[in-house]
Length: 171
Image (cartoon, rainbow, N blue to C red):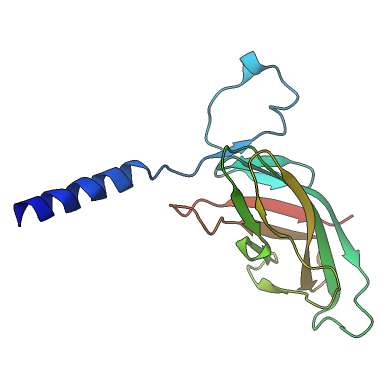
């Protein structure tokens, strides 16, 4: 009985030791500065914009463009418009990383969440990226026409509740 209890405690301790806190970094400026200027800081409360690059758990995410796009011929949006976000994801880890459109949520200024728009032939971004690889893709949302939105990314396979926020202004 004591061996079983010891084994359970030891295993639990090892598992918890491997659980690191999610790290969030603004690497937009870091890519432009020298390596000696870099310092470890917590950017988890910062709100980013279109064009900013954010690194979360070794995955760099850049929202490259935000625009209203015409709906598909047989798929009218329930709201006013279709908002399309183009993004690029780079895995800087030594192991694979999963990215999926379901990790992203879009809200209006009142905190109302918008649904995804599924009528395009091209699927939203979803990938299991090998180490050092990248992928470009899109997110589509059925939205009311606003001047700005809030996009929140929270990785599904994270040990804590950290999230990254972007203020999306449409071109």
